Image (cartoon, rainbow, N blue to C red; front, side, top):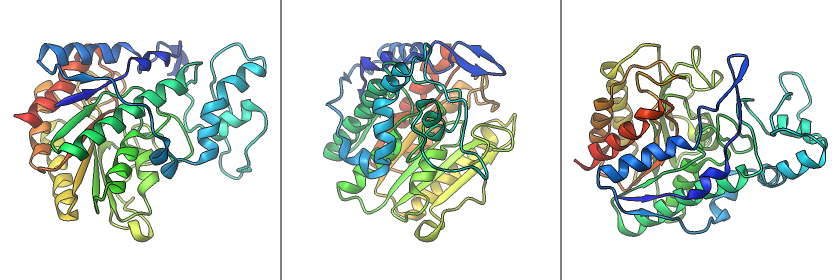
Length: 341
């Protein structure tokens, strides 16, 4: 299995994250990738490839052009306004407020942001592009040759909606890959999201469509970020009705419950008749993850990979979350090894 990865991910490294009422070292930081890379090499995943340049065609099909322009210009506008720190949203167009885009960058950030833990730095947009480029290159490889590939993406993507960033995400990499499979002729594509946090962005992008099925295993939104998305009764709208399957679960569950949800999601994908598969590969369902509350063991990720392999579809694994840094490499590679076993 090839791994596609760009060193440009290091360009995105906010110095702080707002968490629990204080600024802390970001949970989503470059060292996560080092642990994964080291584990890949230790386990003989040596085919690690720098991606081709980003192609915006598939991205523009899913993301609002004004949002993409914002990501391109936000840092420059922020510095031109005289702000000394990183770009962090402080106000939002919440219920009963105007939904018009302000001219002032301080307001504009809030319009395009869904959660204030995610800062934009001088290198964030370049890093986000390199992350998506890795996902695109992995898709091209699988579309051409079949089998599976791993996109070691950072920053992650599944919280990015068509027109908002947040949850550490800027471009929705998994959605872009699904769209590329469709552009290449796959009539039906499935996205299976095993990250602990609900992929609100992926749901948002495909919620009205019947050609992409989305299934997500995650912490119940009454208890877990992103809080306002991921309920079991969110099933799609219009043509997309029945094309969205959420499996929210309560604190403290282990593989007995989580694994049953995974089997149910896989059955839904089989019934859908998917011709290609995208995995939003988060490993923050791990028992020691600092911002999650499931209790999976490292060996459970091997079992998850084995279950996914039963679908026997062209598959692209897209790296999402996982913040127990010293275990993130073991858990990530366990999924890949389980899939290949």
